[in-house]
Length: 401
Image (cartoon, rainbow, N blue to C red):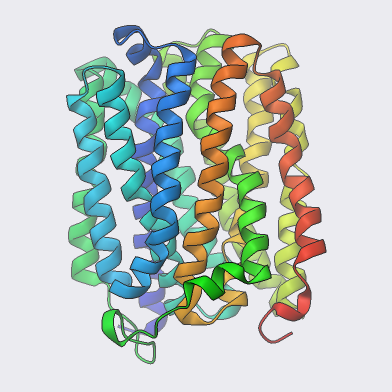
């Protein structure tokens, strides 16, 4: 098999793994109105459950990159997807708030490994000018999984009950695992995994100004997409009168738009580099263009019908796709190969900490006020963070600049 062909097979596997990851995490938001009724949960209770997921996500995200660097891409990915798939299936046994929260915490411990493992696989198989495309490919899986979740989870819930949804999504991860173990290999010329890998100095990495900048911008911007993932079905249910079937019919649209944008943004970055743009200019411009779309979200609570509100949310998913496809390519652009997973883990942890804090705040704001202040903050975080990126991340840090 040629390297080029294997590169795209790897891209397809990463795409599908990320889709499974998001199927698992979207199952709860889709069925949350039913569970809140069955378990007598308030919106603030739901926010606390989501926050526990994000806390676990932050804890493990910081270490997952280092673990992937130590175990290697193949073994590391296999360990993490096995753990999170089992945790997803355990949701079917939940009987109340705290058992549901425990399952969610376990899921949060497993799911972060997807990102540093996928980033490392992209670094191993994709040429530098195509890394943003590779990141865009696997990130598009998050939007595909998110787009598939509403109709799939709604159908399973209506036909077989909400517990079946968690059994299905968790089982999908084990199916993927079989293909991964059979196909993936480390390409020739890339450092070996596990004991042969040079140790990353984690203290030096986290003190590096470039790493701190990436942590900061993800702290501010990741909560925006987490809001769309965990709260869009709740918003449509409470503010727009959607039931489970309506969520299944319409909530997939913003996620599908985001999937298309991931491919476009990843391709565009490589195209611009091929046209002579520097890597720094290409990455930062893609982030800026995406960030400029987010303020449309501010209008979502005020438009007269649900269709227009969903359209406003589409600007969030499209803008964030341009943003994150370039942002997640930056660790490989800025750091040695042996540190890419570690940096990806630290930066993702920063985003998860922001998501945990934001989820607690969202639950409180929604229960006591409305969704309007949440959409306001969601619309402003990316443009402000784009300014931070230009101010704090000099072009000279990029390889080859």
